[in-house]
Amino acid sequence: MSIKTLQPQLARASRHHGNSREKRKSVTLTVIMSLLLVYALLPLFWLLVNSSKTQASLFSTFGLWFGGKFALWDNIVQTLTYDNGIFVRWLANTLLYVVVGAGGATFLATLAGYGLAKFTFPGKRAVFAVVLGAVAVPGTALAVPTFLMFSQLGLTNTIWAIILPSLISPFGLYLIWVYAQDAVPTELLEAARMDGAGEFRTFFTISLKLLTPGLATVLLFTVVATWNNYFLPLIMLSNPSLYPLTVGLNEWNAQSSTVGGQAIYNLVITGSFLTIVPIVVSFLFMQRFWQSGLAAGSVKA
Amino acid sequence: MTTTLSRSATQVGQARGIGPRKARRNWAGWAFVGPFLIVFVLVLIAPVIYSIYLSLFRDQLIGGNAFVGLANYGQAITDPRFWESLGRVVLFLVVQVPIMLGVALIAALAIDSARLHWAPLFRLSIFLPYAVPAVVASLMWGFIYGTRFGLVGNIDSFFGIQLPAPLGSNLVLASIGNIVTWEFVGYNMLIFYSALRVIPGDLYEAAELDGANAFRIIRSIKLPALRSAIAISVIFSVIGSFQLFNEPNILQTLSPNTITTYFTPNMYAYNLSFAGQQFNYSATIAIIMGIITMIIAYVVQLSGTRKED
Image (tube, chains in turn cyan, brown):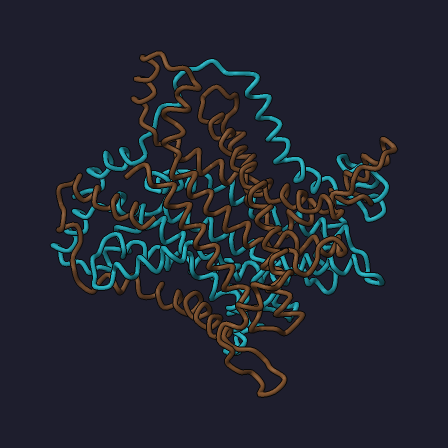
């Protein structure tokens, strides 16, 4: 069985009504939606504008337009070099947590979601019940209990305290499970078994390719979750050289607000700006993938 | 959710006429599910069990850490701070969630209507804040709210007026609601939009032939099709509201007088652990909140799927 015979199936799964139907565009609707667009983008514009201001101009010029000396590059250099370049360290930590945490979470969720969709095995119902129950339990509810347990195990203040909890994405497992049901035809797996291919070989050579859109969606959401993770590192880490960007930025802000602390509001703002650039870029870059994956997930949801 | 899922699984099986042959019954599946489950038990199941265990003990002046049964739960039920924090997130929930989901729903219907200019631009831009970390969103909005160099301060000095401070005690919860709405309105919009996209086109054509107008189509076709997507969004929003922590915790730095250490249940649990060293009581609060969240999620799920059965 070749990939070509699968095309109608995939096409059917992603079929939707044609928005291409010509309809009269409504100016009123566009204007109303533009208000929402301004609401969504205005704070980001504020951040960009104020990343270009010196600390003095922050207080003396109008917030929504450039003013004073254009200091974006100075601010970036200052952000990256302040306190012996601790910001770069935080950035590297964040990347480590994202690559290992989100990458691992996507891998585990894909394996398990595929396993649940394509195999029957003793105890499968129990696995379902437990994992789907856990979708309702948010990470933050578990943060304090996890901290208490990890401190007993001596795992707090290590990178594992951040990476281990990030490895589990019940939502990702659910999405892959739904996606794999249609994207990987059981007949195809049967054919591979006839040919004597092992289950893992079939998974890595055939199934993984068919799962790519679903996988990209899960990867994107786990990347966002780990990049934005705040509560967990806040409680797990006391050593600033292990901080991710989120906790580090809040530390800078707290320092600025403390009486006697050095006020570095311009660095907090520029640091915030630098923190969102990579994630926003990867969102835009990967939109083709996550939009189709999300659509497929919601068919069954 | 389980019932919906297994039902759709059977449907898929029946549609293909492959029934029980759908998958092989052996232990190979465990090799795929096993790695996930091992980590799952370590980071999800074990902490829950450990905190249930902790919630049954207490540090006492005489006898050290001793078993006290459900005494911690009794303490929580009569703890005015716990009730105040719970009341605050419930208020947040009943005001913020309907506003956010209502706006998200209207936006999704507008983008799906094919009557909007530049629909992809709107879809992407409104979704963009979801990618912004809660820390950055809170800092950014916190500065904008600020009367010193924020927009509110700019407006005050430009018009020579004194707007009510967004981070003052009257408005702080609404200000946090605005941040959360900003972060998640696009995410929910996209969930609704994805569900709208899979409605078969022939349904619309039939409705148009019958002379149904746009609002009739929304009411009779689109809203029923969105039912389970709305249920999912409500569940996630309920969970998010009950677990509110990041935004108030970060704004606390900018506004220490209005945001108390027990502003939300999660902040209370956090501060009990890290400022008060009351680990047993903190675990109790976490467990109670987990149970309340699960009950509400379950009720919402039941009402969201009932009509389809």
